[in-house]
Image: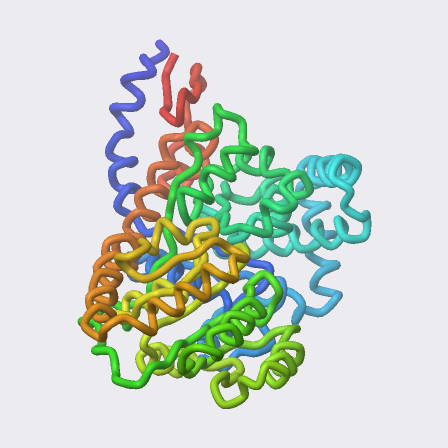
Length: 454
């Protein structure tokens, strides 16, 4: 006699409870990793490993300017696809096609339709298929319960292809703004629908995801902020020194708005003594900015330091009186969190997710993106502020970051989100496979992320 479905679930409840306490095997896939601009991914991985999970790192290519010892350590743990031979790529594709021909054909069918609808060149999509085969092979080797990708561009497409080939359930971490500039090309609507869940680094980022996602999929979107490293969080704010220095830590690219800063300094130079400006970072605009500094006669005030290690960056922030970021667009810069954690006031444009972190008049000064007069005014107010006022702002910022970006709290949040996926119909068979339990043949459906038994 067929047992009642409810009886079956009660019988195997012990298996579920045991699995709920197990560590998970998680694979991470990022287009570029490790990289100096992707330390937030390293911290997320570290947080999951501190909870006992086994994390595999997969990357298409690695950063070329690695100087930080933590990044170099990550590189030794990362499978970098471009460093594999062409034979390895070919073997992955052929073995996948032979072992699971129906699934591989499903991936090819999806890829062909994606090319036609989204304007992806066929040769580029073939590269995505090859990477998906490598992702699938490595996930299988790792016995991955979940595949997590950061940045919702081509990495999200590759995760969708790998899933069709038989890979594990996947999630996508959106940061912006690049993904949203090409939302149709990267099919945010379809990516959110097919994922187990997606995370957004701010409510601003979540709103932009929901703009493209179907309303029925909005419950898949979770706000998971980027974590600040423990070394920034464990101490009280560092006292602000007597010398007036402003630190700018940024890629030297147009969206960062650095020419605006130089123009503001030129305006201020006519009526007040300028602070020292330390610019840390590198990029395509380095020569232009250096020439602009000379043209505006700011050589004695603006200093370029290139790419630095994490320890050097921390020392630069600690020696500064404030940190400045005049970006025209952003996600939510980790460097602002790090500066606030060290007790430094912030001068920043209020674009995208920044107002969720920096409160004008409390943690620092904000101005409209691209607003030269607003930036000039903010700099003037900073120069006129008393040291005790700057210290009060730094203390408020430290508390704000501790509340929103503590690494252990965010690791626990991601852990809960991952474990909650056991309740979804799409993932249940995959997770129960570890316990040797299979779903019975009975009517099941998913209603708002909750398993229902008919």
